[in-house]
Image 1 (spheres, rainbow, N blue to C red):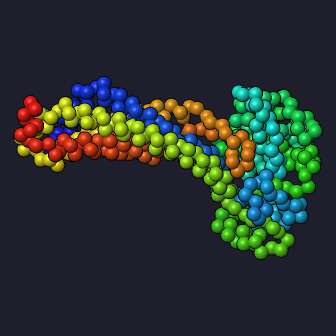
Image 2 (cartoon, rainbow, N blue to C red; image 1 turned 135 degrees about the horizontal axis):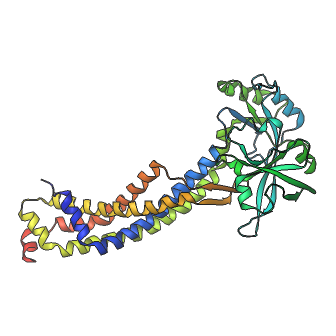
Image 3 (cartoon, rainbow, N blue to C red; image 1 turned 60 degrees about the horizontal axis):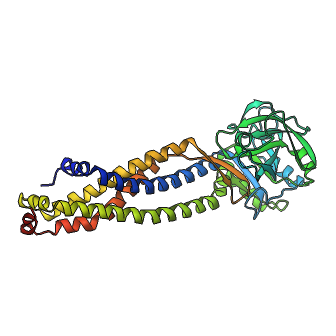
Length: 388
């Protein structure tokens, strides 16, 4: 015979003030915990969604980022003419030779400089990224000193609205449009004609190549051909894998920092829950004796107090998760540790994150309430009734 759940819940409602204070402490921890998970999920979604499933990125062997890579023109031509590269409706091979450079722009919010990625793309570059669409203005003309900027760049940096001019690489560049990349990493980039950008930055080699394979299952063969070709010193990665790798360093930093803070705060929250539950036991000694006299076992009393502590954690978890949900309306901008460029992304709340946050809050309640529950279960019936 178990003690009814309604009876356990009424005990929390009877002590509304202490319940609210303790749940508030647990909610703060859950808020931090959930926010860290949401930040990490947003980062990974931003970078993974940057890549297309059927696209392949080719960079120099040993290079971790496009900024570190170099592919000369002869190598680029060999890769472009590989038989596995798809041919578009216009009869051209679906390959984009690209140059990636970092420049410094002034942030609108702080007035401080921050690194931004300038990507030179070939005419096929847009068709290889169907998630990228023009939001305003027009696309840059090949051979002209024109650029288009991602939505995050347009919102966050000075001089990036259509019709304005940016000066870098000893030239003035006209912003002719903005594009929306669907929340991917391209939203934090500026695009222009690859040949014009390479000439301005005095580059003789491309940074990378992006190609679309005719068949997705040809990837292993394509990669093997590049590995054994003596003319090449390059390696191929699926685009989604490539951009996923870009998130690892920043993701690790966010998780270590966030979980360290969560652990420190959770210790304080569990101590608060323990104090609350000890007070509950002290105020209900006679009640515990009555329950034992009615035939409820020590195990029933132990389970009742543990469930009460977990309910307390659940209430705190719901409050913390509710506050964390509002973070989805905010965006976060930081430096990508792989490229050292500014990267904007959003907090994302998923069902898995919600489940983890609530489980964590209930675990804190369980740990905090364990010793008080043991004390309640060990009480002698006679001594407890005398307290009445």
